[in-house]
Image 1 (cartoon, helix red, strand yellow):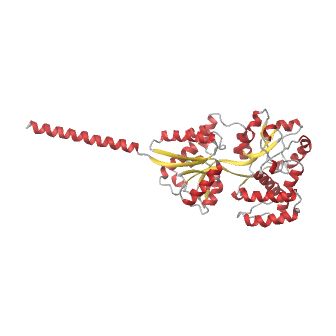
Image 2 (cartoon, one colour):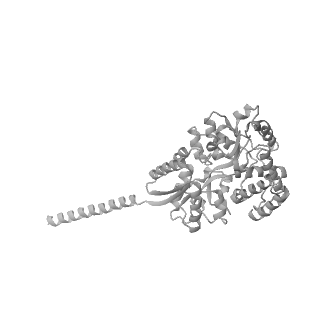
Image 3 (tube, helix red, strand yellow):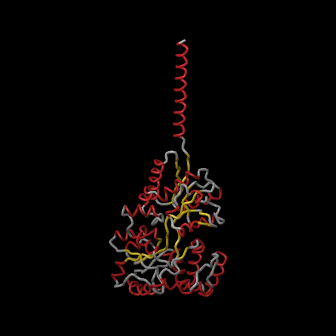
Length: 419
């Protein structure tokens, strides 16, 4: 009778081993199975490099998640994003421009509601007023990474060479041109969008009203547009700025431009070489008719935002990735302030502890953040066709192809349709 028991024991042991093996295989199999999600962003090679390193760190923390990457420079990314959004094939997590919220989510339902993922995304690191930049109809479509504004950068070394202080008012720039122009030096400079926004700031201050009304429609009259056109012509005629068509940002490096206007996020790109060449470059107050009005007529916006696709099949994993990109120490230290000074208190704390909050870009962000007179930018103000049209109409007056009144009337008719 012992023999059968032995057989039963062997069979039982084999069964245990077999079951154990099955369980082990199941554990291995489940461990190896990964959820795949996608991430897209734009930028230069440096941004690509640190973002890839960040994703590698994320995957080490979450071995059950595989992130497939899609990235390129701005123009290619913008074109690809439009196609993807129209086709509904956008990536799970994506970097977006603030204007795309209005374009692709006018009712607030074009992107995933991130507040539904608050178990995975820590939104407490952001102030409510900053989160509102990503809201439509109360739905959180995207989270801003950092804020941005066109800001003035002054080559203090050049200004001091002419016995001048850092300018604060519009008159300061015109007075600087009187002494610098004899040497071919411009007190200020900027590209087309810069000049457009500069003229808006001047005109809003002078006319006492905003270019757009609360519904985003044109609020300027023909006479206000006349002011905008004549201001640009005066800047060019009196050698305060080079004409847009002849603007060359490399002249910032040589000191031929004693000042320039660029986004806070572009401070290093525009002025870094000038600093390396031994010039002292500092952010200046936003020009106004008087120093106490600095910031009136100037606009700020999110430098960039992260959103999650409304079509994602993996909201949990997308939420975990979004939180890592926004709040983690690992990503904060890799990214630094390349995308701007982070709005996340967690990321900001990591940079502060590491001593990484310094330099021209950080100083410029303080000028922006500490100015309570700056307004929220409507994406319509960055409409390229509108900006090009403004410059073209200004040139008609500069080259005596049209009168100021005729040009203002024609521009008014066009902007009524475009804005």
